Picture 1 (cartoon, one colour):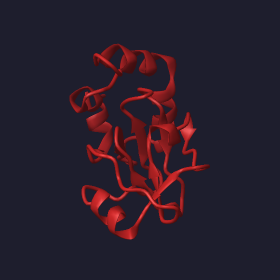
Picture 2 (picture 1 turned 90 degrees about the vertical axis):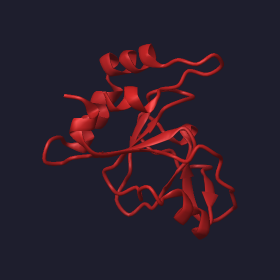
Picture 3 (picture 1 turned 90 degrees about the horizontal axis):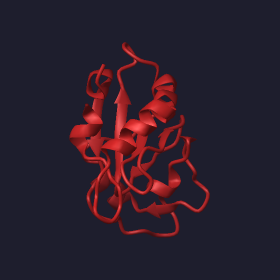
Picture 4 (picture 1 turned 60 degrees about the horizontal axis):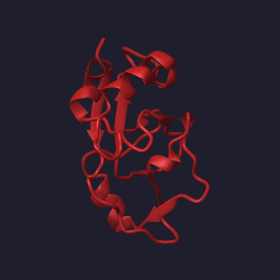
Length: 138
């Protein structure tokens, strides 16, 4: 099964850096994506206005997955209940179709050796390895 078949939605983040501030919504950048969980300590934050602009494609929901498509390629975290977050640059939102797959299973499957090796093998780039959206969907 392709990832696009297991998910209701696959959306990449804005391709620019959000303006940060001390308070507001957590902006999930690649350093905030751990192995299965978000790392919110020291997270950069964005205003209500920036949150609305950066979530116009999709608002991350509980049990969505956030995938780092660059620096480092392949880390995946689950969005927890009651946490409003904003996608940062170089991240992808995956919304599993719960009629087809359990979000936690998908998260740990993507973190498994086989999928991590596959993602690293497909990543390219002259300076920093990155995954393109076509490869993520497939």
